[in-house]
Amino acid sequence: MARKESVTKKIISDGAFELLRDQGIEMLTARKLASYIGCSTQPIFRVYNGMEELLSEMFNKASEYYENYCVNFERTSPMPFVDLALCYINFAKDEPNLFKLLFMTKQDEDITMYNLLNGKEGGFVIKELRRIPNLDMNNAEIIFMKVFVFMHGMACMVTNGEFDLSDGETEEMLKSVIAQFIS
Image (tube, rainbow, N blue to C red):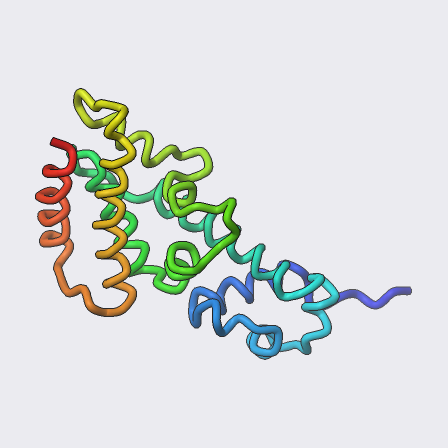
C-alpha cells in the first residue's frame, strides 16, 4: 500500500500564497516555503517542476485575488475612474506585496498592466470609459493613460510608505485631477 502524501499541492500553494502576501515575492524560495509550511523541499519539487512553475501559479492566484478585490470594492463616486483609482490605491495599501508582484514586477510580455487592471471579465476600465459623457473614442486611450499614471504613482507611494493623505483627501485629489483629464 502506497504511503499517503501529507504535504499536498493545496498545502504548498496556500502556504506559498500566504508567504507571498506576508513577506513578498523575493522571500518565496523553496527553502523558505518549506520552512514556512513545515516540510522539506522535496514535496515542493514533487508537486512542481520548479520554482518558476510555482511562481507562475502565484502570479495567477494574485491576479484572481486582485480581480475579486475589485469586484467587491464599494463604488460610490459618480465621477468616472475615481472608484477604480481608489480600489487600486487601497489594494496597494491592503496588499502591498501582491500589488508589487502584479504591478511593479516585470512579467511575461503577454501580461500587461492594462489587462490586469481591466480584469479578465470585469471590464473595469471599459466600464469607466463608458461613463464619460460624449467620449471621443480617439481620446479614450490617452485619458486612460493619464488617469493610470496618476493613480499608479499614488499607489506606488503607498507601497513605499510615502503617502499620508486620508481617504477623503485622496478622493478629492483624484476627483480634481480626473475632472481635468476627462473634460
